[in-house]
Image (cartoon, rainbow, N blue to C red; front, side):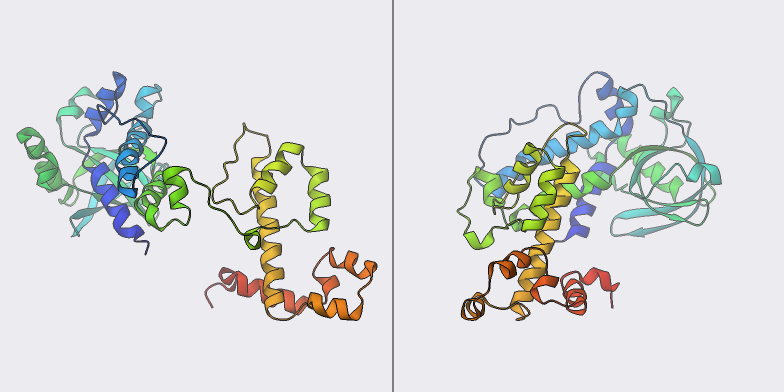
Length: 339
């Protein structure tokens, strides 16, 4: 079972325990969050080994995103904020801060931020109160709900760091305390990657990712491009795009489609989805007996003209518009808007 909430919270605990200014100093020297990263092998003996290798790599990527403004010389703009309310929940401290209405639009849900008692553009901010935060949501026209992880043990063995955490936690819990807030990076994509990594064992093609093996796929798992679709797609796509399309339909668990911008990756993916959705609808129709069986066709002596028209769409095969709508709704329950 996928437990994205728990995985995300564990991910946040790691990142929110980091000291941004320490990361920034390492970034300036060309270093990351981790001193040594393991070499990625060609094969993995287990899911545990796969995660052991890729977790630090993913965290290193996150570190790079958080400090990219420092590395690239980008000018990040801090904004002033005032604490209005706070609450503790499951080891996290949730704080509502109010910013100027023009400033709050600079922040998005799932942003990682730096909050400092002093202006982070000033050198004194490094030794002052500061912490990493995560924007949970916007509240009202000028409010942000920010999550912090400020337990004493995140700076265990570091007396100075522990003292900073305690004083930061106290000040963030004080109504009307003033702070500076700096947007660092959005975490939506990398959080999804982390959650996917934690649930690798549930992926149908997990073994392929571990050892590169390609299981034998029965013909029943292959998708055929309908005659009309193939004619249209062949006219609109080049040879490499058609090759990628057919590779994605032969039942292979993992197909990598890559290319520079403008080479047709998005078009290829849309074509893949078109074929899959057509085949799914047709398969459902067959299961419900809406199509004549091949045996009935043989007994009835279906001519070439009928066979040819059968390639051109569901309407020619006896499926009414009402049948089609009902099948789409059954196969796409999200279209029912939760009813």
